[in-house]
Image (tube, rainbow, N blue to C red):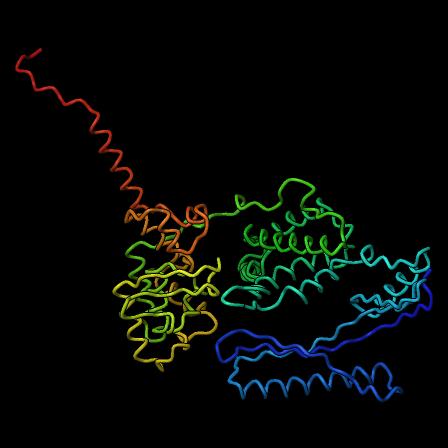
Length: 461
C-alpha cells in the first residue's frame, strides 16, 4: 500500500506569444510564469497575483525582443491552468507524482480524493488511466501534437500544417466529450456524436436565422453543416484515441469496434467549375484598383491549379522567369512532394510585372501576402455575380480544362500534385461544354452505323 500520501492543487500561469517571423512563418512561444519562491508566507491568491504580473512582463519582453528580429502580427495571451497533484511513496520507497488537469478548484479536490482513495487499495495503484477524462487526453494532444509544423530538410517532422482547423476540430470534440471518462467512450457514443453534429447549426446558420426572424417570426433555422467538416472532426478523434491506446490509457479504440464511421462517400462533392465567360467576369472584378493584388493570384490559380497555400507561399527563389517554370517546394505542399509547373503567357506577364515592383530578393514572397485573400476574393466573386464560387474551384477548373485538352489523367495528377489517381478523379468535372462534346461524339458514332437512305423511286404506289 502506498505511504506518505500528500495531495495539493497547483495553479500554473502560461504566457504565450504567437507571431509571424521575418521569413513569414507562423511561430509560437509559451513560457511559465512564476511567483517569488523565497517568500513562503505568500497566500495562494498572492502567488497567483505575482504569477499574472510576471506573465505580463514576459509578454512585454518577448514581443520587444521579437520586434527587433523583424517579427510581426503578434497575438499574446495569458492562460491559467489548474492541476491536482498527489505525491506518494510506494512499498519499495520510490517516490511518485500523479498530476491531472482540473477544470475548477472543486474538480481538483474531487481528483485528489479519487486518487487518494485509489491509493488505499492493495498495491497502491494510482489508476491514472481509469480516472482519465477526454479533457485530459485533449490537453495531452494539444501540448505534444497540436502545434505549428516543424520541417527538417523540407519534410514535416512534427506538428500540423493547418493549426487553426485542427484546433477547431479538437474544440468541437472537447465541447461534447470533455468530462467523459476516456475508458467509458463507446462506439455508440461516437456514432451519436456524428448524428448530433449533423443537426447542429453553424455560427453562420444562427446569424442567418436571426436575420430571417426579423422578417418572419416563424422562420425555421436551416442547418448547413457539411459532412466533410464532421469527417475531419471524427478523423481527429480517431487519431487522439489511437494515441490514448498507444499510451495504455484505453484497451481498444472504439472506432475499431464497428462499421466505419468516416466515409467520404457521405460528403457532398463540389462540381463547380468556371466557364470562359465566368472567368472573364471574375478577372474583370479582380482588375478593380482596390483588388489589383488579387489579379495575379487568381490567374496563377486558374493557369497552374496550385492550392491557395502553395501560391501564397511562393518566393522569388522558386520562380524562374527566363525558363517559365515555377518550383513548388515540398514543405509548402499538402502531399509533401516537390513538383515543377510551367507558366502560361499571361501568368508570365503578371509575374514579370510583380518582379519589377519587388525588392528582387529570392526569399521575398512573390505575392507579398502572409495570411490569405478571403475578403478580397469574396468581394470580387460577388461583383462578378459568382457568389457560389470558392477559391478552390479555380483548381477544379484547371484540372477539368486539362482533361478537356486531352491531357492524360496521370499527367493531370502530376500537375496537381496528387499521389493517388482516385484523388484526381474527384477534381475532374464535366461541364456543359464537355457534355455537348460527348453527345456529339455519340451522334457521330450512331451516324456511322445507320444504313444509307434508299434512292427515291419514280414509281408511285
